[in-house]
Length: 525
Ligand code: PLP
Image (cartoon, rainbow, N blue to C red; front, side, top):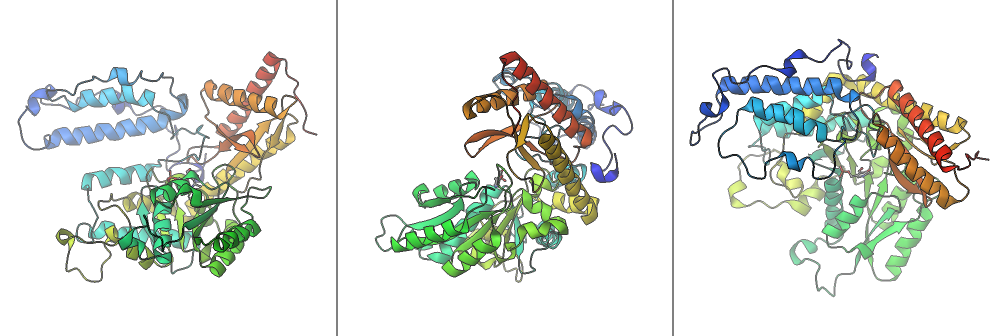
């Protein structure tokens, strides 16, 4: 495996897991409780902390080296894990080595292994080595960068690293970014800014009981993520005022349907406010026609928010940028480095063409947070949250540790693997592709059974059987009303062998199920 294919040090390259993870004593001066008796002030002794940090680092390294040999889905029944944790908190202090041992024996086996190379469900993600190191360092600093004053480096690194990401993605220079936990929050902030631009009086007066305020309407494709619904819901716009615009056969929003919906709403006295276009939809990774949507948004004075939470990372590859043509006309764009840019959860960047729009919607400075600092950014002004984690550190470390070249080659590897898997599906008479494959997700289904409903049930059973095998985890969706399976490639440790292994399991389980059910294994044509 080459450097370009995985994390910085290939998994298992030097053989067995690190021996230090297995034993040792974090309490060189004796059993734990007596080192920090109840009522003592302050943190644990420095030598105890140092030893525990080393142990924790070894646990992480051991986990990453061995995760691929575990079943992706833990074999635990609901409630089984909780039963291992005492119902009452401990009265006396416990030694850290005992707590870390419990972490290893109780917690690790009961998690779903998102860092597993066989994790192909939803959108696969990566806690890469540099990103994990960034998380550890950020935890040590424990900075709360609500104001520039409370975190000069975190504030300025966040601005700089978002500029880096903008440059990596080839976005226009006027975009400025800030980091939130999730795309759901980014989309919420974007739609709040859209509402503010349309009706700034809502900030003071609210929208309840106002005869002078028309219903404000948001548009998104039928395939847009549910975070759009949640934003509309949280903003009090009302789900009835979210128009789900029909998509074409390739699952892309139909611009003429969008234009017609806006016209109808205006004619009915409603106020069209924003459109959310998706670049990389959750089900099939389709890309809405951004140029056409932007043209309608410009004409109709709609805020254009582009949800590129998953696929935005692909724009680091110049050859992928034609898929995003028109994105530069957006007012806001959300992209999640914690989805496909090898950065641990959570890290979502919201770019705004004019950040003043966000600031005007959200700035509110209580007396105790006033400072005389001039010419600085106070990140609390750009959204709901006051306190903020130092998320930029891990993104900075990821981008530096792989470089633009390394990021591109990993994205390209994932896309090439997805194309190869899609080719195997196309060649097999018992399977069919359910959508085009523009990025690293393949939607497919087995063709087994004589009616659509029978085939749906077969594919549901197939998914269960594939996931029960252990080495892989896939998820499903519905496209055109039919059940389809999704293979999402995105973990930094996933290589060709893992994708080929997934294909072998899918084929074998499909054949077993067909045999067991006496069902005809139909060929596509
Ligand atoms: N947008 C898209 C297209 C998604 O697929 C998802 C989640 O998978 C989201 C938004 C929500 O992301 P987050 O979990 O960061 O809120």
